[in-house]
Image (cartoon, rainbow, N blue to C red):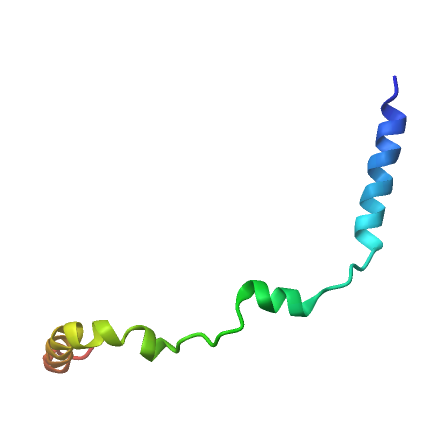
Length: 69
């Protein structure tokens, strides 16, 4: 016995979670995430660009010579 009281409590909590709209502190969220700007993709991978550029140029030439279907 006693299951009815526990289920009623769960139902009450679930209903509160479903229909309540908590306030959102956007300033705190921004501080948590970090307010700095993210590097662009180009800046992020510049160090690899020079290393792998020789491989990319070889692949590009091979693709141009390949017959098209």
